[in-house]
Length: 210
Ligand SMILES: Cc1cc2nc3c(=O)[nH]c(=O)nc-3n(C[C@H](O)[C@H](O)[C@H](O)COP(=O)(O)O)c2cc1C
Image (cartoon, rainbow, N blue to C red):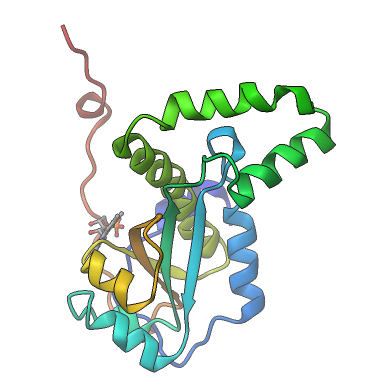
């Protein structure tokens, strides 16, 4: 699909065909494509919990305003943003550093500089860490929706859930914030999609402060 067609046809879809499964291969391809998004220092502080079973999706649905799409979609994702994903000693911070050494873009004697850079940006308070985790994971989540659309699937991002209850129910450690849930599947034939929603104009988007 052309990029512009992906953008124009992606919608937050309410009706998923519960009988049309998303294969592991398709899901893997969507995740691999989405993982190409940029992130601060390439730290990639996102993770996914993949729910496929009816019982586990119903457990989530009961904590997500009982939105039927949570269980009707063949796959529902709990998207996780790691607020510790910048810290020294973190598995992926270390992997990132080693990969940069391998690629020749950093050397072992720059370790301290790398640590100080991350700490100066994210080390001061929880707000910085929340922003770090959620802004990077937001790009990833958006790319999941585009990657799915590109393969003919639809998605629905969801904020309507009890954050702390979902964290507890699925044993999610405290370092993760859950920026959103996402239903993924195929649109149910015969259902009607609501007309496209309004968008802010360019003039409404561009601002200036005096
Ligand atoms: C972060 C986020 C959270 C959302 N949460 C919900 C939700 O809980 N329930 C719902 O029905 N729609 C939810 N939506 C869908 C939006 O209402 C929808 O994307 C918006 O109205 C624009 O429609 P469109 O995506 O079809 O263009 C959410 C969208 C985003 C990006």
